[in-house]
Length: 353
Image 1 (tube, rainbow, N blue to C red):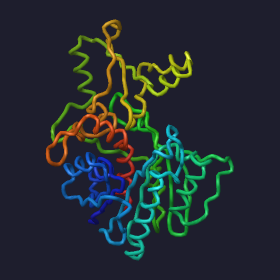
Image 2: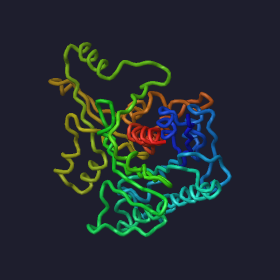
Image 3: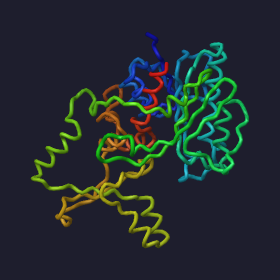
Image 4: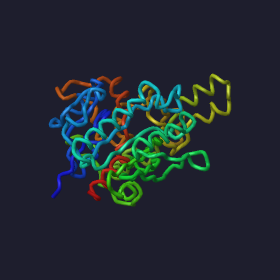
C-alpha cells in the first residue's frame, strides 16, 4: 500500500493535515509563523516537521511529499480589504508557494509533488480587474490562459498546461457542514494534478464522506440524537436562533440605510455569516412564543469550532498544554478553512492516488 504524504504551507491550525489524516494521508511538514496556530498544530500533530517562514524555505531541500496544500493570505484579494490583489504584500506570498512546488519538482525530476491544492476567497475571481485569477492559473500551468469570453470567471472550470491539469470550484461551507447551524463560507478550491488528468475526478466527482469526531478524544451524541433529547428536555419548546450580519448592519447604519439595516437581522434557519479573523459574530436566541425572554450574545470559540467542522476543543490548548486565549482562537478560526470542504478534496486525492 502506498503511503501518501502531505506538506501544508500557510498551515494555520492544521485543517489540511486533519482532513488528510482521516483518509490515511500522512502530514509530513508544515509552514506557519503565527505563534498560537503553530502551538495548536504541534499539539495535534507532534510528529510533523515545522519549517517556519515560507520565504526562507527551499523546496528542493525539504522532504518531498505527494501533496502540497496552501491557503495563501487572502487579505489583498478579499472584497472587504483594499484589494491590492496578488501584488499586495500578503497575498503575493502565493508566489513563494509556487516557487517551492517548482523547486521540489526540479529536485525530484518531476516526481513530487503529485498534487497541489490552493484555497482562497471568492474575491480572487474579481481582484485586479479579474487578472489575478488568470495569473494564478498561469502560475500552475506555465502557459497563457485566455480570459473568458464573458469577462468573468465561472464558479467552476478546468484548464490544461503541457504537464498539468488544473480544476477549480467554488464551495460554500453551508452546504457541506453537518451541524444544524451552518456557516456561509464561500471559498475557491483549486486542484492541480502534475502529469495526470485526475484533478476533475478529485474536485467534481460525487462521493460519500467520513463523519468527523465532534470532540478531541471524547465521544459525543450525534447531532440528531442530541437535538431530539434537547427538545424533550425543554418540553417541546422550539429554540429560535437568528444570526446578525454585523458588517452589513454597521455599513447600513453608517449610510442611514433603514431597509439594509433591518435586513441585516437574520431570519430563522439563516446560516451564520462568514467567520472572520477580525470580528465576532452575534446572534439572538429565544424559545418560540417567549421572545421577551430572549437575549443576544456572541459566538463562543467552541461554537466557532463547530461551525468550521472542527473537533470540539481543537484550538483550546497548545502543545505544552497552555491555554490559548479567546482572542487568538477567534483569529485562528476566522483564518481557517472549513473542514468538510477540505475533507471532500482529501477523500478524492486518497481515492485517485
